[in-house]
Every structure is written in C-alpha cells, then in structure tokens.
Length: 181
Image (cartoon, rainbow, N blue to C red):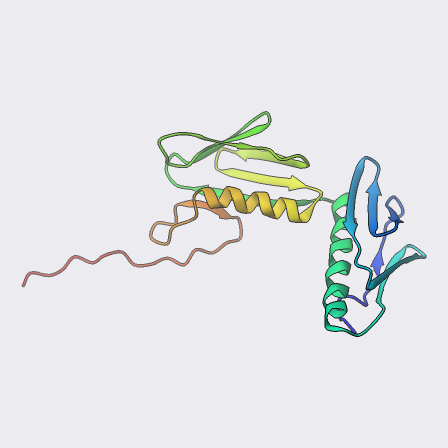
C-alpha cells in the first residue's frame, strides 16, 4: 500500500470537504478549491478525517493513490493557511514594485516588465528587491513563481538574477589573465 496514500488527512473544524460525483471540493468561508477524482480511488470523510483507498492493485491505482492524497492535503492546507514563495532580485538596479493588477519588474533589460497578476494570486513587495507570491493553490503559487524566475534566471558568475529565497547558486570562477609568454 502507498506510504503516503494510506495516511489520513485531518480536517480542521472550520473546513468543509464535499464529495461529489467525480470531484472533491474543499472550502473555508469564501476560499474554495476543487480536485478531479479518478474512478480507481475511493474517498471517504469520517470523523473529521479524509481517507483514500484504491479499488485494485494495478500500477496506475498505486500511483494515483499517493498523488490524490497529496493534492487533497494541499487543498486543506491552502484554504486554512495558504502558500507563499519568496523571490529575491539580485543585481544593480533590479527592482520590483506592485502596481495594482501588475508587478513591475526592472531586471536589467532596456524596458520594464509588467507581469500580470493571475486570479487567486497576491504579490507582496516588502522592499524593492523582494517579491512574495501568495495564494491558496500550491500549484498556482509555484507556477507563477517559476514564471517570474524565468524572466531572468540567476547566472553562475556574479549570481545576478531572480532567485528563490532558499536557493543556492553554485558560483563559477571567471576567466584568468594569461601570463606573459
């Protein structure tokens, strides 16, 4: 049996988990997330816990068992606490600014980049070199963070670019000046 899939998901009192025909809907007040269920996985809610069980022992069922458990667990965490990722801008003149529905980024190009805020995402800019991406959907937060990082990846010589807060950039040695022959 799947090591992840067999763990029950504890649901806080203020969170509702609704099982419909082929989906799970997790809600907490105005926050609402849904996930498609595969017919090979059975989901049940008992005593404030969500339990997943597969109907057969095929490889596909085993794969989906742990996946769906992790997705439902992330939905419960998302509607209660939310997710966030912090990005740091490293480089002279690299700045970020929150402009309504856009994030204005100056990343060393000849023009500023206006990054549109997707629905369900918030940008927090505590200072001009830090961007915090917040939201209730873990997958969407990670996707938006990766797209922002993709605009100017950190380079290995000086470390300039957009990087995650806890990311370690392996630095390379630069060119050495050749001696006189």
